[in-house]
Image (cartoon, rainbow, N blue to C red):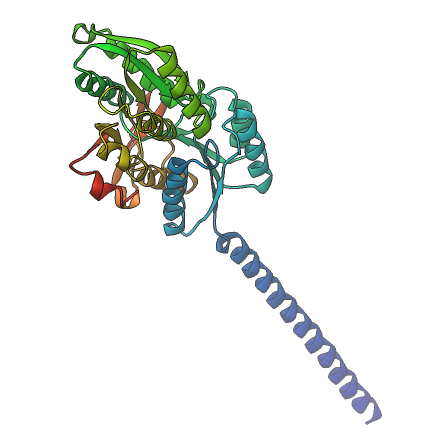
Length: 355
């Protein structure tokens, strides 16, 4: 009997220990499952980080682009990081790129201050797994996956020559007030302007100077004043930069030169309305910079999500801007938004309230 009781006690003790071990294992399994679930939430629950770098601060055009970019990223559920250096230099943008690499962002979209100087930093970003694309002012094809172009560069250059020629009657000296000498978009537009000037219909026009205001208001004002002083017979100024055309508009207005020196180029309606209304700038062109940034944002999202690769033929829906197609661009690829839009006295009152 004693042996039987002893055996019963030992059996109970064994079952108790076994139960305790089983509970421990069950507890451990539950803990591992919770950990795996938490890790999954950490990876998938944190929004993707999309960075945008513009040329420099204090540029209204860039601010509108950033606005559109941020809107697109928020629609996709991501986080937009908006950056710009104080000065429009490649060196300043490189510092920002390095910081973004350290932050491990998922994409970098930029309007480049130099097509080639940025390549080592952008290549480093791409090698670390960051999707890189340019917009507005392109970087070279080796430094990006694709480029989001605001409009056909040939059309942008051509229509500005057509405009200035019509404004001054096809005869006289003209000058170009550009942004920086390294800005790829400006240089390409000017190249097409020069090609357009080779046509017989423009033989009465003389391009006397290409000046650079570095997309800085004060310098653009100084460059405009220098053009007027150096070339007293100057009949027209083309400023394919929103900062430059606004600066030139102010100088020509202050000097009461409306009807004497014509101004055209690319400007923001809100900034150029008074100069169009007073006749200093009979008309000008642009596209919606908000939409440019917006389309670039969607392009970044689609690249990070693996929906496109940036190869010719890729198609995707870019929110309210509709379907976009990746096309050839020299050694690389690009996405073009549309034709430049003309702003004049007939529509500037409406558009100046938009942007």
